[in-house]
Image (cartoon, rainbow, N blue to C red; front, side):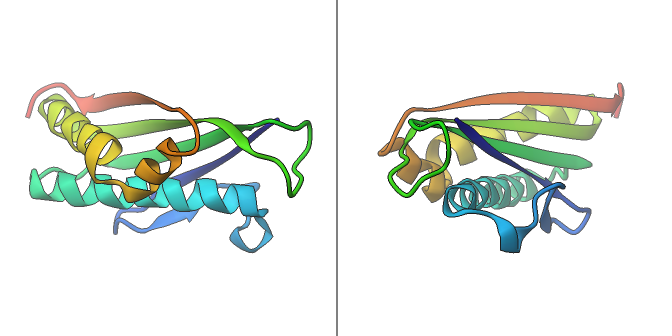
Length: 134
C-alpha cells in the first residue's frame, strides 16, 4: 500500500499540506512523510536563498510503499519517493534551484538521511520557468 502527502510553499516560504489531508488527521506513517517533506522543503528554500533565488512555486510530494495492504501498527516502509515540482520566473534560475534541491536531498536534509537508513529513497525533480530571458 502506498501512503503519500503533498506540501506547497507560499510566497513567505511557509508550507501547507494540500487537500484532502488535514494535519490533525494524519496517521503516524503520513506524519513521517509530512515531516520529511517539510525538512526537505525548508532546507531547499534556505539553500536557494543563499543562492539568491526564490522559486515562485515549490511543491513536494512524498510517498512511501508499505509492506502491508492497509496501514497497521506493524506496517513497515519498503521504499520512499520524493518529487519536487518547482516553478521559477526566469530560465537562468533553474540551475540554481536544481542545485539547491540536490544539496538538500543528498546532503543537508536530516529527515531524508534518516529515511535512507530504513529503506531506499528515490527522487524526481521537475522545474519550469515562466519567462525565457532574465
